[in-house]
Length: 254
Image 1: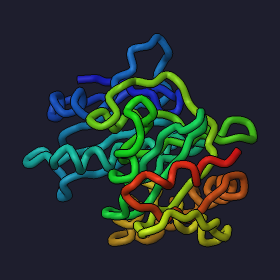
Image 2: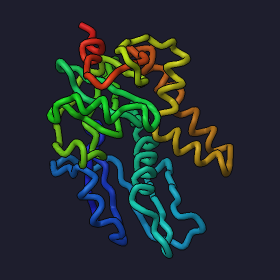
Image 3: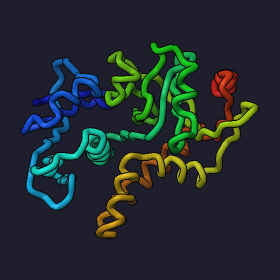
Image 4: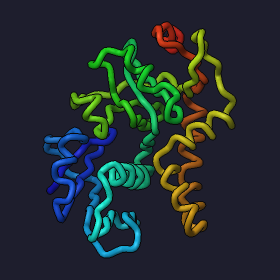
C-alpha cells in the first residue's frame, strides 16, 4: 500500500510493504494526487525486532520504519515515528514540524504550541474550518528570508480539506489558559527552548535518550540552528486566552 502526502510542498511517499496499516492511512492522512515526483520515501516493514518499532534513517535517503512482526504497534505510534522521520529528512529543506495547531487569520499564518491540555483544541474551535491548517501538527518552511505556514497532511480528521496554498507566518504562540486574553513577547532563549520542546524530532530524541546518548545529542544539534533562525525572524510570544475567542484581535499584527 502506497500513499503520497505533501509536506510544505515537498512530496513524501509512504510505502507500507506488508499492508499492515492500509486502512489507517486514508483515514488520517490527506493524499496528494498531483503529478510532482516524490522527494522523500519511507518504507514501513514488518521485521523480527525486540522493540515494537524501530526507525532507520540514512544519508542516502533510504528511510525505513520497522514494526514488530509478531505484534505490530498501533497506528498512533507509527504516526509519531513517521513525523519524526519526515522532520529529520526535511531539515535540509528548511522545514519544521511542530506539535501544535495552526490556522490563517487575515491572510496570515499563526502557530499555537503547548503540552496536552494547554488548550490547542479549544483555541482552534473559534476558527472557521476553511481557515484551519492543522489541529495537532504545524508545518513551517523557510522561503528565502521569510517563513510560511503550510497545511498539515497529518490531520485529516480535523482538517480534511487538501489546501494547496500557504500563508506568511506572522506569529508563534505558547498557550496558557487565563481569564483575560493577553500577549507577552518571549525572550530569544525562552522562545527557542519552547519551540525546541514542541518539535517532533525532539520528542523522538527524548525516547532515544533512554538508550544511546550519542546519536540523540547529534540529532539535537541538527535542530539548534533552524530553530534559532526561526526565532530571530518571527514574533514569538506567550498567549493567555479564554474560551470567548477574544484573543483573535490580539494575535494579528498589522
